[in-house]
Image (tube, rainbow, N blue to C red; front, side):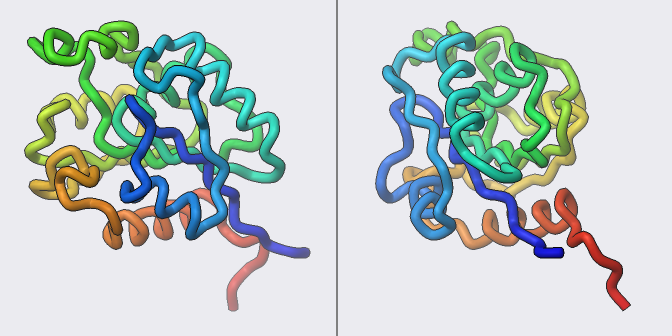
Length: 193
């Protein structure tokens, strides 16, 4: 029986992810599928979730979703609206944006469309990676979201928004977390001696 690693599906946040962003680097390095929104600056739960569903349906094999920022919100809204998908084996949820954070939608009005943040357990295993000094979500709120989603939680330390601006183009620690998560979510179909 052949063992295959699930294919990654990259789910960017607002304005997509730049060429230097770790999500884009992972897309090229791992041959990942990518969700490209028609309007990456105007999210709505319905349109962004529908595009994620299209990419999932068009991508064969077992899948692991990799969301950053509003991409995390896309995944949790999609899970609420679509109930998940049998081929999605897990999700890496990095730096979730707290659309309910006071003042955030004053600076970034588009985020208001993604509020409130869904609080239902996810229908697949997930790992939330959050920063201790993320301007888009406090560590406590990220922990609250992880608990509500029935996800594992890990802190990345003081890592800002875990994006290019905070020095996370190449994100080696993220690759280690991804590898550990993949091993946990998709164990090989044989017994080790």
